Length: 141
Image (cartoon, rainbow, N blue to C red; front, side, top):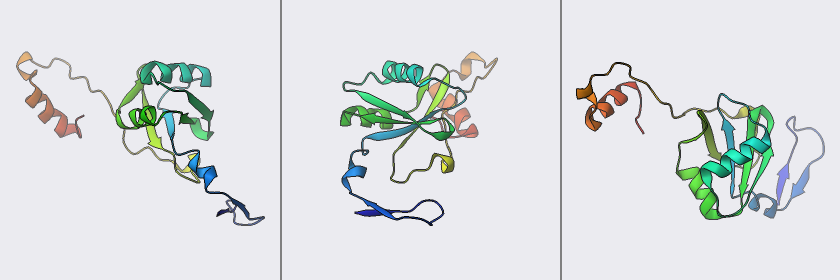
């Protein structure tokens, strides 16, 4: 059993079984950066990019975050490991769920981005050269 206290630490202390955390183990916390989606549109977008074999369940959280619970461990791993993800042109921030997660305290530290290099001469269209340019800006994917 774990103990839970409210944020102020004042009030009743309740216990809950470890199994209540276990059921959230295949859950990701996501946020579409720079765009707002209804839960229905977001669900459709996720189904389109992830194409899960099993079902997913979305729950809206504060500050534009959502939890995505996966029926399939393979689908969960794909969503977490095959990043970066985009819905339309908006970046999808993805992280794993942790107990006592507070969306008000989540900071997005990294995100994928596209950079357009206007008027780049053709001779620079080489993988090695483009990686060197990218490394000057940040870490290339």
